[in-house]
Every structure is written in structure tokens, then in C-alpha cells.
Length: 303
Image (cartoon, rainbow, N blue to C red):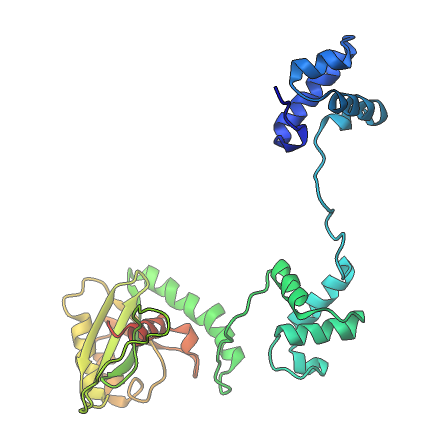
């Protein structure tokens, strides 16, 4: 019967066979007897015994195969650390590299500048993958946004709202408005490659607006309307929002002029036992979960 190649066995089995071979050899068994008993080649047993005599107990454990970490790489670990640090701390144009974002070509130029290595673009991609970098679409942020105001909202304002809601057993929800048009390109459908489906939209354009509220627990309430957003339209939604509620509502919205109009402020003051309105920092849609509801609605064409 053909004996198996011990190198193809899993590490646990190899370790067990090594230990048994050394134990039998120390008991005076011959190499051939041990090989027949364990079902391996005689040369394998001889190699194990020789390694045990040279290295002792460490020879009984299977050592990791393949190249060690960092072996065979173009860049040293120190150079890899330097490149990653520069990528995290700077944009390419800050380092005189002609690119707004870190692309493979930009990283290639950085490696050439810092390490003096002309690395193939494919190898650059392998390094980025090894470092845990993936190509991502950059987030957009309004240039008018005040980072200090955003930090104050996250660290002070919202925690205070949350604490106030807990004290009053109130519910926190977020509001926003958006709209849909019949000629908007929304949704996707499956089709064979190269055979893009066609639709025939109506020549008449129809639009619909909606105002929505989503709670921290994911409960959504919304109202459709066709006219322009006014204080009256907004107040009608507020009335329906607090109708038949058993808990007070802490509602968070952006700083749209309608939200801060005198009529809305007066209405909220008259119903302060049922609702409070709090405002987000200017130009900070990323803080409003209702914006994600809008994105989902616009992408899928359904609310």
C-alpha cells in the first residue's frame, strides 16, 4: 500500500505523528518499525528524529509554512508604515501629487517619491488591498458647514435632547421634506448584459411632495402634498403627528425658513406639552436620519 506524504497532512495530525515517532524511538524502536506503525516513510521518521536531536521539544510542533511576514515584498515594513501615515494625514495635492483623491496612480507616485521604488500599478493595488484600503465614493459636505457647530451638536446639544427625552418619557424623531417627479430616473431592473430595458414615460410631468418623520426606533409617518411647503402645510403635518399620541415628541428638523417661521413657533408654543422642535446645525444633512429615508425613497421610487 502506498504510504501518504506526511507533508500533506494537517498540522494537528503531523504534530501527533511526530510525538509518537519520538516516543517510540526513545523506547528503542527502529526507524523502519516506527515508519510501518505510523504509516509514513522511513525517511520522514529519520528527519523527525534528526530535527528533534538538534532542536529539542520545538521540533515536535509544525512550523508555519511559506514566507514570513514581510519577506519577499518590495517595501519594508517601515516604508509601508510611512506611506500609510502620509495617506491618512494628507490629500495627494498637499504632497505635490496631481490628484484630488488617493488613486492607485497617486499612491504609485507617493511610493516613488518616498521610497524610490517604481512599483507596477497592479502591485500598488495589492498593497492597498493588504492594508485594508478599498475604492470609495467620497462624501460631500457643504462648504458652508461649520465643523465646530457640528461637534457641539454631537457632543452637547443632542445628548441634552436625549437626556431631556428620557426624563419626560418622550420619543425622539427626525423630520425632513422631499419630492418625486414622474420623469425622474429611479429604480433599477435586471436585464441581460447589453440589453438595457426601455420605458416610455408619459409626456405629462407629475410631481408630488412629501414630509416625513422617522423615530429612533425606525417608525415612519409621512404626508403627501402637491403644493409648495408653507407654514400651514407644515402645521397640518404637526397636528397629525401629535394626534392620539400618549408620549411627548422631541422632533428634530433642519433650519428651513418654514420650520422657523413665526406661525410654526407660535403653534409649537401652544402645544408645548405634546411636542418640542429642535434644530440641526446649518448645512448638516448628514446628521439627519430622515435624509437616508429620502435617499432610499428617491433610489427605489417608493416610500
